[in-house]
Length: 435
Image 1 (cartoon, rainbow, N blue to C red):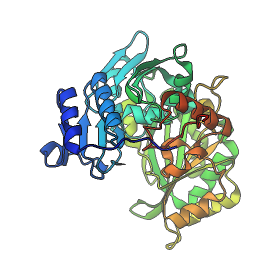
Image 2: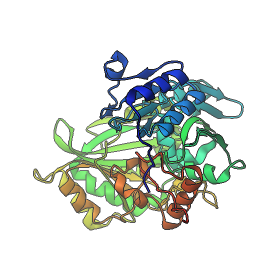
Image 3: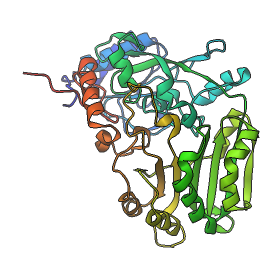
Image 4: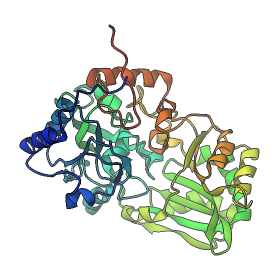
């Protein structure tokens, strides 16, 4: 099903309606503010920057009444495709961050970024389940699951959601918690932006006054041994340790190399002990190292921007050989491959599961900075499943879920957005209504 639209009278009619119902922040081509919004591609007729839930509701009402194609954007961290001739609704102005240190809870607006949450929580020795990049917006990251350096200890960011407030396609203000609209609460914890426009979130924070971590480069000759260690001993590693191994064509001044990235949630002594078996295998680093650090410093460890993503049940000797060889062959089309160790709390959510994030039991995932041909070659060893936040192809959204979870998501979609107004995303189409 696609979104139902009504005939558009004229753009001028829609503009008058927007400006009559919103106090400000309605931009059209020719406005300086419109030209300055570079976080999208396309040519929307209107850009609305909502500052309140009421303005979100008003903008949705105009889009619905005038048949305007709609795209929703929270912070603008990622570039989206805005609908030509339609309405781009941005919620970046709703960026308030409140931290309750006694309850270890944060409440944030839809436009908040992780850097702001980290800064507000750190003075209390608390940390959120944020990702590699602090400039990323909280909402999009969390609704897609949210993989953190702390996820092996505490699960996905979506697992820590306590409350979500949103505006539905028909203009209703809806709050979802474990006991209030529990069907919606389940769906938003990994189902993406399919069910409404989020205006605020509330989630748990964790006591993490210090971590032990860093990034170090080692000779490429040690990469196979490191990957084999992870394949054979990954299940033995403590849940407090999150680890990724990167083979990169340009790891340093000497060309190809192995990059070890690690964060241990329990500080220096435990972190040194947990990393020691791997470091004994790879030897002395060419550069970099590991040390005690504040959680706010973890973002400096880095990550691999994925042009491909895959899940693996095992790191077979053949796969290890191909991974290492891919950055030493000049014609392989591979710039970098990052193998992340999952397991821990990622793999053992509560029963029933808190949300629809699926395929959590895979022990290894790979982020690929590589050509399409190289991605296809390396992913033939994979499970064929995916994870929403690393899935670039919106036509493959169903691969991020089990069949049961996808069916249930479609049912929730039918209840809250039956006409699929929110479909310019990793869309989950509603179950078709009878008749």
